[in-house]
Image (cartoon, rainbow, N blue to C red; front, side, top):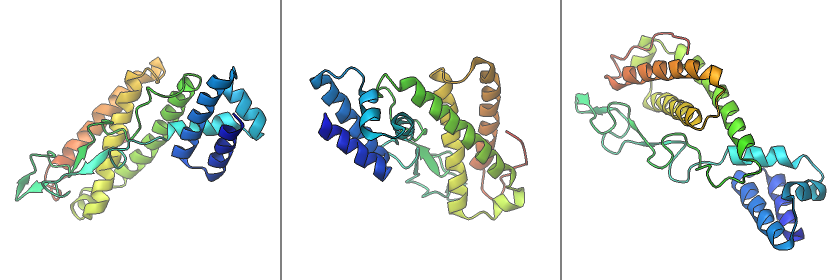
Length: 215
């Protein structure tokens, strides 16, 4: 158990998400072998710093290993959204495709998360989503029709990726019942508005019109 706790201490010092998660899993296995009832309590006592919030944070940031934060570049149009003068049929004009593994959330599957922190990780991811919502709202309001027409490809793809990821995370968290019930109608309205924004991106970039609208 001591060796696993030392690995966890080193991982926390390095602040590396995957290392922290792997080290904590090693602590859980060692605790099971040695009869330690509360692995988090043992870690807290050995490391002498607020361990639980750091571990919860690490699990909440675990990313899908199959994509770049939820999306990949469309291999047909290479991100332009166009196939000649027409809308690309592969990505429907977005220039990006959703990851088939994470569904565009960019998150790793949370099913294997340790049960003792499962609810806390879910709550933390909900908090991340709300922060992303504010940021994406500000980004969308800052894009005018003229700005959209002249937007560089990389900037356009970054914005499309943000909208797709946010949309996917809202849907995922509603499905996981992480959202307070009173907030679900508001989040469903946000999903509809985000879909409207994506529909604007689906047309030719020069003709798309991103009017200022609060999410």
